[in-house]
Amino acid sequence: MAAHRAQHRRRPSRRHQITTRAVSSLVVCGVAVVGCYLVLGARSHGLEAVSSVANNKLAAAPSPPPPNQDPFASPQITSYLQGRSGEITAALYNVTTGETYTYHPGLAQATASMVKIDILAALLYKTQNQHRSLTPQESKAVTAMIEASDNDAASSLFDEVGQMPGLASFNSTIGMSETVGNWGWGLTKTTPVDQLSLLKTIVLPNSVLTPSSQSYEQNLMEHVYDNERFGVAQGPPSSARVGLKNGWYNEPTTGWQINSAGYVQLGSTFYFLVIETAHNPGQIYGEQTTSGLSSLIWSFESQPPGTETHGPTLNAVATQVP
Image (cartoon, rainbow, N blue to C red; front, side, top):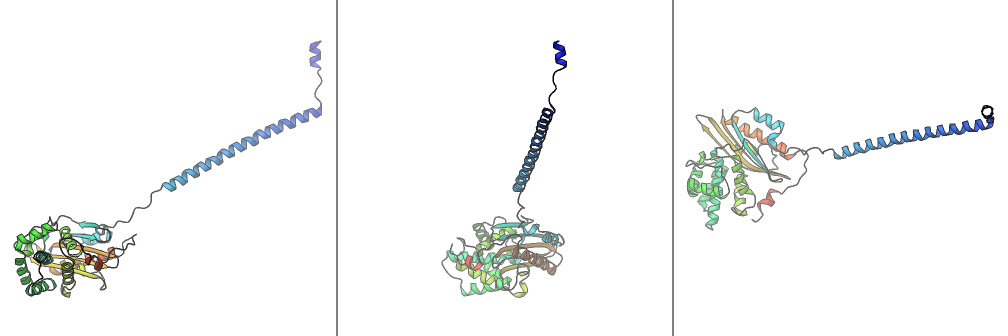
């Protein structure tokens, strides 16, 4: 009897069936909506995470390196130097940045007449210590030695400073450790870096030469005869302030020695440049090598990539009291 009753239990009404189905559908849809929301939410958070990582990578990306300020590493100058014969060594000091750049550093060559600004600096240092001015005879010889590169005048003044020992003593005072003296002043061996030390003594404030002595030597270097203004003087415009002393002589067994040392200043462009060349096939060829390199150096230094700096002017530096 119980089984019979169970078999004939009353079926739910049609209205109840519809209600149940509707609720079930809503539950299924709700689950689907929640599932969609969860999926979309997860995807949204995933995109945000990816975007955050990308932004972090962008923020952490390194800035481009600063331009190389070494003129001897520039493609144009490297190509030029590789195309010239002979033995070339050079050095540049950027007064504005205080940086020194070299090409074949440590290579010592004969100074030739370039040593004459060294002789003059030594003479001025000597007269300072003696608390006197140059005599009229010394002044006349100095002018001829620097502006006209007179060898007889140089020999007399070389004697005045104590010849090789006297010049070597002065060079030691200003830190020229790579220069080797000679009883024949033109055969003194030196490096461009040592010559930069000499130029700094002539131009920048120091305790060796007074501003008066510096201005005196600078004035002579800026009035070198036109036919001797190859090298450092080539490239800068006429409005630039250029002081230099060149050297040249023919070595019978190895070829011409051609050198140029000096300073250039125009606006914020201010540098010292020393070029030494040996084994040149001829005098003109060596002069062209120094002049060509100087022109490229001027182009590089006057508009260095990525820098707009304003350094001291030569007038301001030369008149500062040590």
